[in-house]
Length: 231
Image 1 (tube, one colour):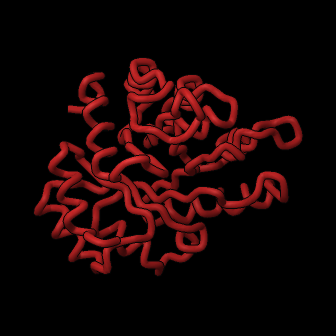
Image 2 (cartoon, rainbow, N blue to C red; image 1 turned 180 degrees about the vertical axis):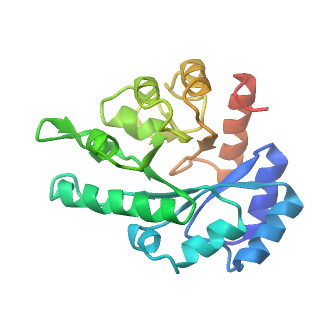
């Protein structure tokens, strides 16, 4: 928020190849942002948006996605699993079809709630298993683990439908967010899984940091480089 362009430049300087935006474009218009990203050598890994935006072919989301040459449109927490989840899945399937008709892929970002069962079936599985669903999966390793499932197993289960993975680590002591490589996630196992799953983007995300955010970003990419996952 304080230094949008400076933050992007710092991220590029650390060796990150791309960035995922979540509603904040620094006040820049689509072409302005595309030009700046080209200047500093960053690609766009994805855009977080809403179902309403995806269902509207004239929304700003599509304008930014086209200008940034971005393939993936993402949303999360689309509805409460404890309420009418079937209706929520219906809307997600419709959004997936709408995004596809515009030349993009809708990826759903999970939190822990989608790992709960609804009528005996895990809520997330209901989204991906719906006949005719074009929805893909942006798997968040932390929230899969928090929901009581194994991230590696989930990546393998939906191989070919996990184009993006949020690599997020969990503190061994208290289960809080921590830098990648400093928690309990099995980086080598995750790396092996994404190699055969068709994953195009491994995205570092840390919801809260215990130190300056750019320091955390540097620690995470250094861990990925040491593990041979990032180059």
